[in-house]
Length: 545
Image 1 (tube, rainbow, N blue to C red):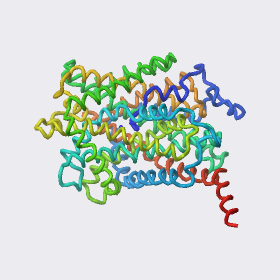
Image 2 (cartoon, one colour; image 1 turned 60 degrees about the vertical axis):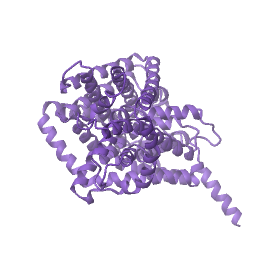
Image 3 (spheres, rainbow, N blue to C red; image 1 turned 135 degrees about the vertical axis):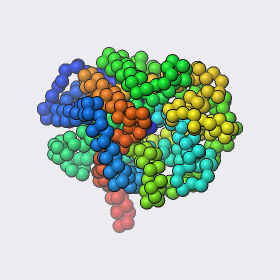
Image 4 (cartoon, rainbow, N blue to C red; image 1 turned 90 degrees about the vertical axis):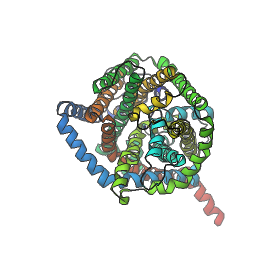
């Protein structure tokens, strides 16, 4: 899932300001606020409440696990039953809202000063968005999701056409999630580069609530919610990564069965690797590894395309795109009103995905905002939504097509193991299975380390008044806490760890839906009074007279 979006690499951390400052805690007075871009200034309320609540949840879940699991199950049932409609309706509204901004008169507004050139060349900008679109989620779900929809079609589909299966996967990874990212990224980029506000989620609400309230309790609550959404969304991706690495260890024969303790050990080891990289400040090496990871991901895709059912994959590409375009309206309208089976399916797939993407919006939104200075709103929306959607289409067609092809030939990939082992099962029927399996584990591990690095930097930024250079201790703290939450998710899930990851992601993301809706209203108030729009209105009135 950035992920969301699963997920991001160390390049995000570098671009957002990877140089970390002195490790001491610096509390800032109001007079120090102007220095937010030069030195870290810890917000004691945002940091203290977020850290205290996170530690409290960890203690509760690990010490009183049965009570924690019971409480989370009750909350999850309430959220899915009473707020599932909110996830479904709001996700489609975000798509329509982003497209409206792009193709209305507001699309010409630059994310910066009038006439300002883009900070990054278009090729580099696209490459960085490609990095943002790749990660643990695509590797984990690339074969599993299309194959699942092929064998067990979603409620309402009477057959198991490959095109419909791929279209359903693309629905969860295409326009809808990237529109969510675009909404948050636009609000942050406009406020930061057009209005000169701090790079905080709360700063986007100044037009709605006023500066005084946003610098007070209201703004702090918003930033706390953003930290929690980022933490749990990232932890879900880390948990998926641990599940897949554990499955790979089984495939190569290092252990007979990857139990919960092994998964916990994987999370702990990779979290320590991330903390070491963050505290040492050695970002060049991690960035180099991350760039290598992108090449390895492309290599893996090309290998599966050539060694797998190439003709089938090529045939599925237009079929999947056509089915996606034809079915996007009906898929967007699917709700629990259709019956209990649909409600159960939605909670496992669509609602989980929308919650996962929403939990990643603070992280990915800040990343996209930071690399898009000088772009117009139209350029931002078109680039942020269409480019990653295209990447997802190609990725799922290659890996999902290979899995569907083997399943159609009588190789029971779907019934042969857990979701995390499906990719390895598909690779097992291609040449060089040992090498490709090790490649997958290496990809997931590096995405794990670099993604946690970048996400923790964002949480450091949110807890230190929007500084682009959060302190080492803050980045390390949030990294360790996120690793702890991933362990808790796996622990709470028990034998069905994937359900544990999904449950807590949905619960934590629910409050942030309201934050995103508020950001849309606030951004509209901002752009409707933009000087560029006001000048256009004056010229039109003058022309009429």
